[in-house]
Amino acid sequence: MADATLVTRVRTLRRSGQRELFLTSLSVLLAVVFVLSVGYGAVPIAPGQVLAILADKVGLSLPWTYDPAQALVLTGIRLPRAIGAVLVGTALAISGGALQGLFRNPLADPALIGVSTGAALAAATVIVFGGAFLSLTAGFGLPVAAFAGGVATTFVVYQIATRAGETDVSTMLLAGVALNAITAAGIGYFVFMSDEQQLRDLNYWLLGSLGGITWVQLATSLPFILLPAIALPLLARPLNAFLLGETEAGHLGFDVERTKRVIVVLVALAVGAAVAISGVIGFVGLVVPHLVRLMAGPDHRTVLPASALLGASLMLIADLLARSLVLPAELPIGILTSCVGGPFFLWLLMRRRGMGAW
Image (cartoon, rainbow, N blue to C red; front, side, top):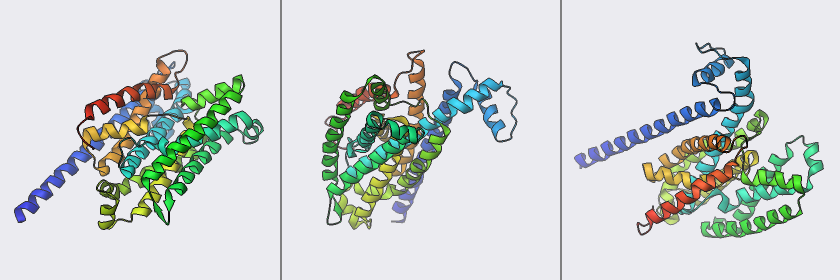
């Protein structure tokens, strides 16, 4: 018995060490991609110059020299855009990982519970009919409306799926599909009713873009993304128990209904805030958790933080490609993520066919 206990502890420590190494590697990848992303563009900024500019902002001095134009481009344009990519990628990926664990379904995605399409419908309403509202709110009306629309749609889905204090995740998934169809019809109507300028704004929003993100928008969305990014990994143990089934998770001592409510609220906040600053960007919440599981297994103690790190890195890479593939224009990032995510997901389905559930 003592030998078996010792072996179990050694295996646990080994897995823990591998998890730390994996997360550290993803953190290094994110740092490297971030520096490369903010340095690439019409005004090139070398990695050393990027570090020197950032160090100078906090009162430190590094040996690399730079000119004021580089500092202005970095701090005024590229840095908020890169931070926005990190926030959006983190929000979508960690939300996707949490929902896949909650629904025990690898096809679960933040869009399935109506957050993305609800936000898009609210944004489309404001773009087509809310010109005066946008003028009065000095540009804040669109992201605020998108955030409110995403949260409101999720609340409706949750209420439909909840009876007598218990939430049925299958009903929630089906209700999300139905509301997605309704909101898609509403968006189509607004596209039909829009004029040329409104249609351009709608396409920009519905296809997703990180261009034009400001420091004020980042400050507004940061709490709504940072809170779920910190809180969702703390729910890794109940999510691991959910893989066995809700009844089994309850027998293990977890408050199943409370966990469902907390996860849905956190996902709604994170994805609503992400869509509010970037528009609708698909496949990140679906594909990134799969990549993590392929590399590190299904343990949510690894899946959730690793999804956040990998989602942020992949969003930075996608934004870098969107800025460079069709110069001097900019490719909508939603098109790029769908072009990459769709074939990858088809390959994943063919690879896993006949291999059972994850």
